Structure formats: structure tokens, C-alpha cells
Length: 101
Image 1 (cartoon, one colour):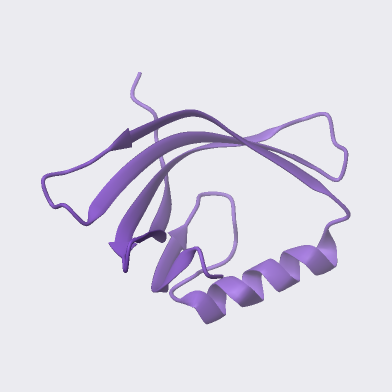
Image 2 (tube, helix red, strand yellow):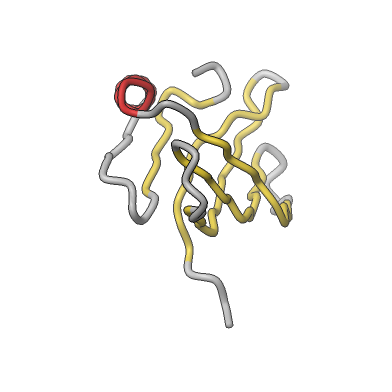
């Protein structure tokens, strides 16, 4: 939880959870742990932008997950907003995006 801001927001297509703060995130993680045997998640094609605002960054990543040993991957393009808080980069928002064609 220490990698996320207190007001973290997560909205990912295909996930049926709403996360509006660390408590929601903690509950979502605990529910996932109770229902999964294993998950292998890889983040590929990571691109990071630093807007003019010095205390923020935006990462665009492709996330690929294999859940419970399945051979079919679950993939999403994600936009991750980061905020520099007391010299630590914390995740403040995660959302799925539609890739440009």
C-alpha cells in the first residue's frame, strides 16, 4: 500500500472493483488473494512522460497477466499517474486506455 497515494483511484476495464482510496485498494487485493492461486503479471513497453509540473509523471504500460496457470493472457493498456510525495514516486491513478491504431 505504501506505493500508492492515500487517494489512489483505479478504473481498469474488465475488473469489477472500484478503487477510490487505499482502503478500497486493500480490500480489492485481499479479495483477489482469496480467489487466486497464482498470478504472473508483466509490464512491457513502458513509456514515461514528465509534464511541466515537476511533481508528476505519467507512465503508459502494457500489462499482461496469466492467472491461475491459464494459457490465455489477460492484457490491458494502462495509464498510470504518479506523484512525487516527499521524494517518493507514488501511484495516484491507474486507468485502462484504448490504444491508438
